Image (cartoon, rainbow, N blue to C red):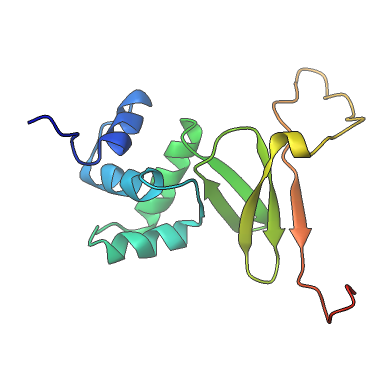
Amino acid sequence: MTGTRPFKRALDRLQTAGFRPTRQRLGLARLLFEGEHRHVTAEQLHTEAMGADLRVSLATVYNTLNQFTAAGLLREVVVEAGKSYFDTNTSDHHHFFLEGTGRLEDIPGDDVVVQHLPPAPPGTRIARVDVIVRLSAEQGGDGR
């Protein structure tokens, strides 16, 4: 057999990060990593998992997303208290957040320049700067 194993991309990512590829982890990794980069909430991923006949609790989805984030497979983007998205694109970039719809969109890292950061408190260092540009829909046709 010369073809690529099904789910190889997801399996490779799990194994590279040191995870045992359980059925649930592999299923969630497939949903997250087999397509294009995306932003997903735990609730959205849980709904997708159920639609794909992957029996997994919402708590397991949260735990798995947090484990993947800690391992560097995902980035958590907190848009407001109690509302986080998990981003499969872990490169240096920022986000637009459309408040009316909850849509999150990538901004290339080089498109945002932050100047004059205060010095980090003693004993710490700045790991990265995350910028979220919040958008609202325009009211009327005159831009106001």
